[in-house]
Image (cartoon, rainbow, N blue to C red):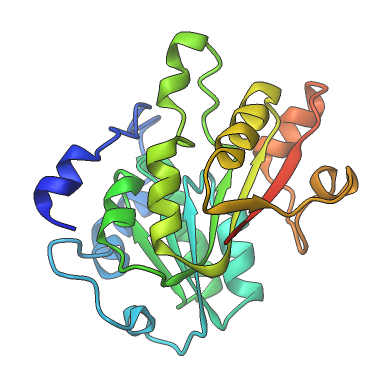
Length: 233
């Protein structure tokens, strides 16, 4: 894809805050000293073999878009050491928190990007990712803001391009309108098939699922979550 094509397909996918409360000294140090080593360099072409991005052998590749506090990503990375994870999160405080987790766990199968996930999706080669996770994304609940939701026909095109045949797109949310929005968009996209056969398939958390702070907040506020899995056909 040319630079011109990338520009024409931009969705300006990140609209939220970039930074919250001031970072603690250790967090600031992590961003300064560790993020440059972990961050993808999108100024150069992606390697033909993405496994070479990682200093340890990996047999699968998984992309998490908007990892928030990083609970899910660090859990997956430490329990699935043969999978290479790419985590994308523009919020500075969340990035600093995850890097702290990476340092504590000694995880070496994670690479990071601290800006718009569409930039990573457009940089990746075709058919290289085994799974994309979009977990509790910003729901943009006001109808006038729905166009800001990350799930869109344009971004599903991006997902379809980088996923391997049979690869998975996993989505979790506690906002009914966003769940329905995602079901409709994936139904209307020829590259994706919903894998659910019965209600437990979308009401039961994904296998080896760690509870996250977003999920805990939803339950405290009386909202249930949906866990949707779509296969790249």
